[in-house]
Image (cartoon, helix red, strand yellow):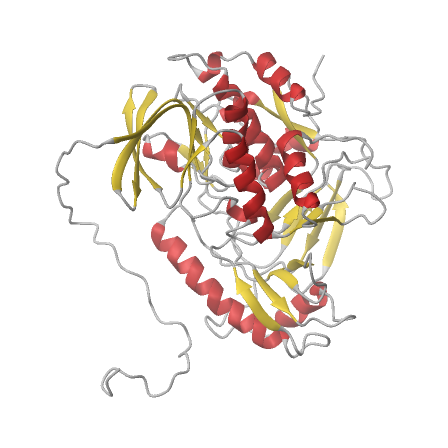
Length: 486
């Protein structure tokens, strides 16, 4: 580094300078036509190796189909591994007794348990959520998909699709070897952002319909936390008192986290949140990643001034920011808030859940939960909390008896395509309903259902012609405890 280009000191200059590349919207260059080699022909091609994509691929592979799974990282797991999200929510209904989730979601947890890498938050049983080791999950998911006969393409990105009417004829990918094509009977979009479907030119819904998305969070792990340290709600309240140095804005986060599996002094912290982001936009995604790291540094510096956290140190930062919402398909059935909170039963149900509607404020601090028991609670940026009833009942009214909600098969079917299924958080739901079904145990179920349906789709047929009853039969055979509408 020469004296001319060396900064006067090595401290960061705040506020954060403009660091984004500026696209030129007035120029373009021609891309010459070329022949693209076919990398694979298969029955089912799955794009995205996160919780949904892994389960879709495993389900189709176990049904005896030739499956290719394409993943951009060198490992599987998506939010569970790349984003360090180490919590899998409860498999039980609101009564804490009735098992409503099973199948591959439960199998993944059992495989982690065998390695000592999963702990239930209920010390007296298994009705709580599960805390997992994100690193061990990489091994478990390798075993799951390879043992199911799935062929992998890692370090590979979806680049484009070739569409033929209402069908995708080929998916184009880019990897270390260049561009190639994958041909399949059925394609499963497990990208989280509906990348495959959007590249087919199909309309989607972004965020709340006005383009506002739940903000993403960059997770990180710290060590050195002492017993009796101030709790995370107290940490959040203290952080909210001081504007952040990189942009002068109030701390916007709902701070949550979990003690580590191997060492209780280590914590995973979802301690950042970047506002105004569409993760399916390259510029927004770049800004989110960089701003989140600046925000993380500010959080870590102030965390060390709080009781019990004085000796904490950074263990690692997630490989990617954790997304909550971007594009979702417009499906044959768009799941609604009312259907989730009311526990609507569907004749074509393929997944069930109890995780509440969880909306991180797209425009500032705070979070809103709406629970199946009829209550809501809102946590402010200062850690304050408000409660009430969303069902109009008085505060002292008995809780609603809704055991769980369901997601129909039709919510996985894009209305403008015939050989594509959506799995995970890009499934068909409105903004509120998506706030419930986007969590990983639900995405795993949607993936397993998509894989089961893809496996029984005849060559050249439409996925909407698949008999949902057959999909349900396969899921039940695979230990999914569906509560079928009669």
